[in-house]
Length: 492
Image 1 (spheres, rainbow, N blue to C red):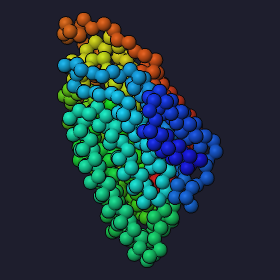
Image 2: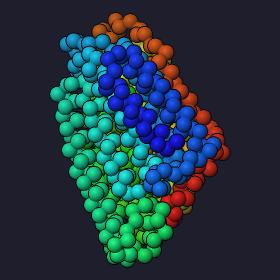
Image 3: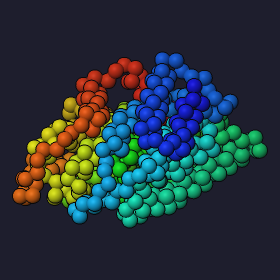
Image 4: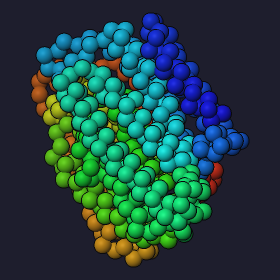
């Protein structure tokens, strides 16, 4: 089953690059997404056997993050089918994107989307640090053509920045693998195992200075891909210049892959007895990321970049929660779920808005509630969800992180956390509310209501419903899974 989860989207992606008919490609994309989601959800009932002598296996962390990726990909697939079907060649003078559609670009888009799913599947299932490193690098290569899909000079710049910055980060993470191997070899000689489970067992005997060096490299390297400041420089451009369905996957799924890499490294440090060292670094990077996000969110004029900086904020929240430990660590794992689905919802809605208004300038987008009423209502709901307001699930997870910070005596971190959350809410509301309610120009007043198709509205509605449900009631199976994932990290 593990092999099928990886190989089916892999071969489907190759087939999509070969097929000549766009309808067949879209059908293949949908079938693969349904298969992948069904297989992933079945793993909650019957745990699949490990593969490749235990190098690939399900554990609590892997199952949880793979489920997030699979569900989000399914809803994004439904949206993508409508996107590919209805996106015409555009030659608007006002339009900031140049989109050139032909069979070849759609083949690349669909093929790379499926290859992206295959690589993102490999990440949480990897139980070997070498495979984990390869799979995270593979997500970069598979997703880069998706960022360049619009063939605009800004898309090209964003793609190169993404490739260069993330490649530097992944090179630093490779140094982390080398340092980890040295830490193990100084105790066991040439008999080195990079399998996560075996390294956890041997962790008390690892060479601590080299292990600390390894964690720093992992945090900086995978933190680059995760979007932690100050290594975040690729993220705003890549998220804002990608097609909205790709932005949803980058923010809701790709960033989690890098987060998994950091969690795996933290597992070793916790088992080796240096959790406090790792936690201090995670708290520092988390708060700094929230600070940077706050500075750039306030006064932001591009709503897709606004959502991108919001992703940096939430990656900081995840890092902060794991660093604090205790109930905050549980809150951080839960928050990964909440952020992924909420940000997926918002980026898909941003696609609806961009498709109609032909601009990402917040000042030129007004009156969404009249012109795109369903998207407008969901846009406001997404604003409250992403800023941690009740009754959405993000309120619960952010509250648990605050509770954990106070219980553990991190009063300065808790105060800074609350301050950043308040400022970010003000900054995002100041931008997003006028987009829905404001009407300022005759040009916008004369616009007729747009057509909102079922496939453009249903995916964000479904994601929004999930967020409301998680804000009211967390199912026992999910709570147990989050608790198991949290306990795997050890430490306090």
